[in-house]
Length: 342
Image (tube, rainbow, N blue to C red; front, top):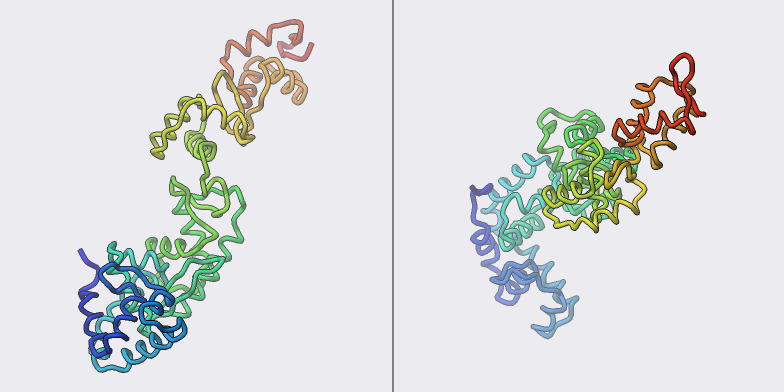
């Protein structure tokens, strides 16, 4: 169902009807309001009419002023009022791409809507910059609050942060002081977050800094990290490859996955083909070395305590740990029944 009650092409036809043929043609081509929907450059239009780029720009500006002063434009005010209400309902400031797609998926229809936004003084366009995407607003106060809150939110994030969407929305709205209840809405918050270039979400819908490998995934190793982090325990590299294919629709070969995991310090080999995340505290080394390091660090321990601690650091079978522990060449048992280094 359409989000607007008017027919954009008909509105454009009406508000340009009083223009001369050449002037109308220049406006239609500049804004992509023609059958092909292509935005023509000043140079392309200049060549067509044998005039300079600057002259095309002058004609365009004069034409826009003529439209705004015309009676037919004033008669179409309900159209601009409707668009203004729509932008308000979306949060009073919204990324241009999101606004246009919300109204229509048709690129040609989007061109007409953008033309109306450019024409009316109701709407303010904020150009694309290093912090934010191109966006439109209808309330300067709300726009200012959103811009400030997004910058503060980014400043509060660590490079490695991966934050669930509900938590990200909560943190963001905390930054928005004195915000009226009509804007304390999850969908509006998501649209505001989508304005930012510095925060973004990964393919699993989790948020963080746009520059982070955890968010802006760049290959098998990044997908593997997200898969294993969500899984929460060691996985065989074949399992990881299959999960990447299933979750992200990216065909991943076992050998490729294995090679990527070996090279990346975020992963540690904890068994035959089994990988864990380094951040979980797992370490490399054979069972004997892991037991020795634990006893060196903590002193004599019971068999069960050793098994428990080893399993937190390395993914061995229980029997493998016991077999190494009873090797008198490396470990000995005290009178109290505790094990220590031989």
